[in-house]
Length: 492
Image 1: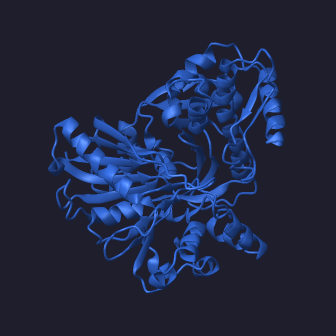
Image 2: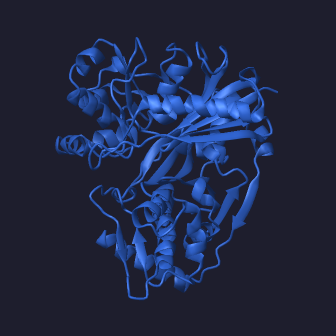
Image 3: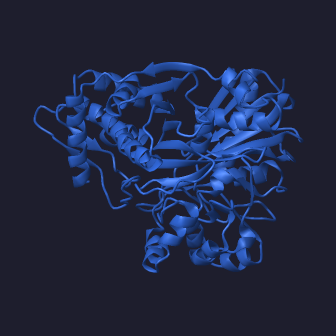
């Protein structure tokens, strides 16, 4: 069988996986790229750094596996969502650095749209809130602030895309300018029900339709590789999904009511709501989960906490209390409890269900007896408690209690964190054998489109679980944790 090359283009780096039809990982490679912080609240990436890293990790996995590019039968891409790129159609060259999903520079544009009374329109048609998180206002900022861009955009000389679109454009030699429905649903420009760009929303954001990509399914052959120096011509690019929707698919949360949480730079929880979008009354987002090549569409409720693994990085880089992120579990486990410390990791504001970009991180309950181990434990608990708030809101919107929570992402390997997550919900937490389920989802989507697997039954046959965590905490202890957390969030 031909192999599947799955690329996870993340916020801090590119990771490539080469897999066979049994989901055996033949090789894996990762390369980080620079984060650019031009001023407080601004976060950028150089798209050329992303492309160079993409090429490098593809070369790495082919060398490590001893395979050739001709052995690759399909490419799947999953990506950091909302990060916004604008490039010249003729040359493929970006006109500026990409504005990253974490960037807050468009807060004033969001405020302007709210004050003009447009929030209800965006909420109803896109399922999203007016927040700097999403791509649409980033695109508005480009067109307003970079000289000459609007004129070029209106003439169709520029192309907009999230990272999936930019990579597809490069892979196909500029032939295909397309995105999938999951990424498109994060732009503030897509109508959730028609799955097409919405003219009224384009008008409010001042975005010319001429720069937008085609909206396609998440699993189909978009085009083939062309004119590359690191892969042969003719390999189908056949799966694309935003990282969180890809993880939902990779966890095989294919039925209505199934849910997963991904612990990466941020923490993202999604619940499959079936074939119809569910409007949120509890501060969550409605989003497209995926569209398959048979035309079937699934939607999801999503809650995002902007800081999860990044809180551990801050303890490492900002405070220096650990030498590496992997050390935090042993340090946190060296104390029996958090010593009364609560840590709200709102280092870039609070996401769902609060949506308070002005919130800031808070550590409460410090005493002379507080040690770095208590801080470490409170940080891990804070990550789980953010998810607790999101899942409670999800249960309220969906009208159904959570049964199991499937987990993935780097921090899902932390057993202390997973046990606390199970305790605080309380529900079973299921960890798969392969915790990089963002890349797994992209591989499954690409494999479905190219006939490696025929349908969901084939996918279930190759998916494997690693461990199940069962809640063991007393109700009294659980209530105390929640009370302490809620008081700290009020301060944040």
